[in-house]
Amino acid sequence: MLGSLGTASVELNDLFASGSLAWLFSPSISLPIFDGGRRKNNLSLAETRRDLAVTQYEKTVQLAFRDVSDALSARVWLRQQVAIARTALTTQAERARLSQLRFNNGAAAFLDVLDAQRDLLDAEQQLVQTRRELLSSQVSLYAALGGGALDFDSPPAADKFKPTAATSAP
Image (cartoon, rainbow, N blue to C red; front, side):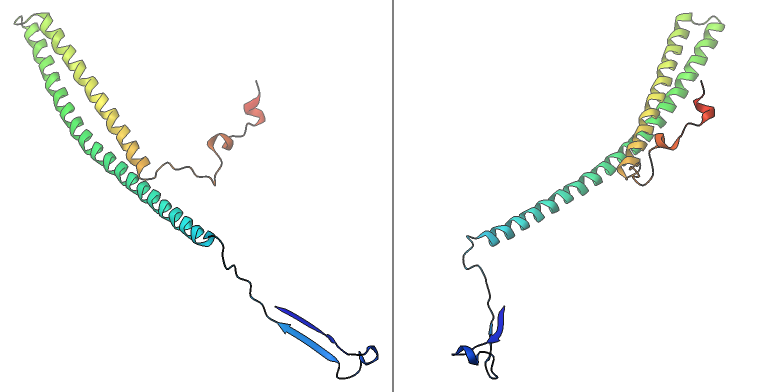
């Protein structure tokens, strides 16, 4: 908007006389008539970016659900495997015990005892390995559910320990 206020007169000596007050008010609007489609293209770009962000978010959510589902199914499967490995270990321990009894009574060779003990050791190692995988899957499940996220409000663990004169002495 534009406005002006002043005095007007045909002759210089009547310039400041009463009734020579003049004012002008002229509103104006300035809009681009032709912008080459820039506003329309900017709107299209903003909508495309929004759609891309929504798609990326949906992909992230689906990936998180898949990670949790995979961790849960691995946990169930590995628990079953641990139960099977424990049964196998019990069976091999009984076999080793019976082989030792047969050897002690002279009914079997010591090679049978060694084979049974080797199989018992293999069963023990298999149980340990399966339990390790189960514990690892539980950590994966914890991480997939959002556990272990960094807390940026608290200082790192290394910064919590400040050496004192007693601990820094040689």
